Image (cartoon, helix red, strand yellow):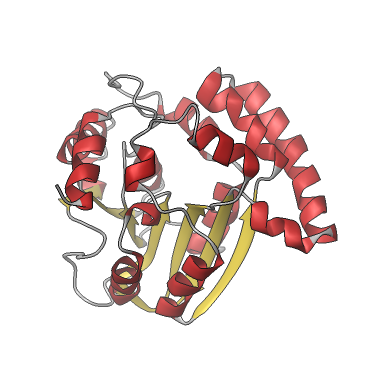
Length: 261
């Protein structure tokens, strides 16, 4: 079985909104509650670059690897014209049902496709976005496709997990689903360079050293107020450490690469 087929099978069977394989999510999502956890510091930074000061309204935005669709639903609620692709049909069916239940079907265009072969014309989108998706792709092909479908002057914003954070590494080899090891290639500086080269103009910012620990309140015991408080405090510590000791950025959990075509 090819790696892509393995991924399709895994993600199609994994309808847990937290992506931990903890059982199927049923019913209509509490979107506001899910967004409490979605908008952590790296996401807030990503959004500022995804549409600048103009906001997402009427922008044509592609999300590659939409998963359970939380971000796509948020964009649609902001009156963006949202396109999503994913290789897992059951996840797309879930998103389709959520969009219908929230009255957002007319704003979300759902396509089953791989990141390496996007079925869209050249220069079609104002912006393209991923979160924790390119780690599952043939990066050179996926990066070239993402750049191809963005308009000249458009942006790509890619939020991807890195290889070397010690807390994340411990989690990946102990508590995380074992399947992740077969379907994932985490980012390092070389892979960031490959992605940046596809666009030509890019900047990278790193997030989460000790603040990785705050995600216990999202993926362990779900507690929105404790998550927000702990991630705000620990992220401030991390930011100071990254400024004082730039070499520590190698151990960040996430990188956000913002590119302009």
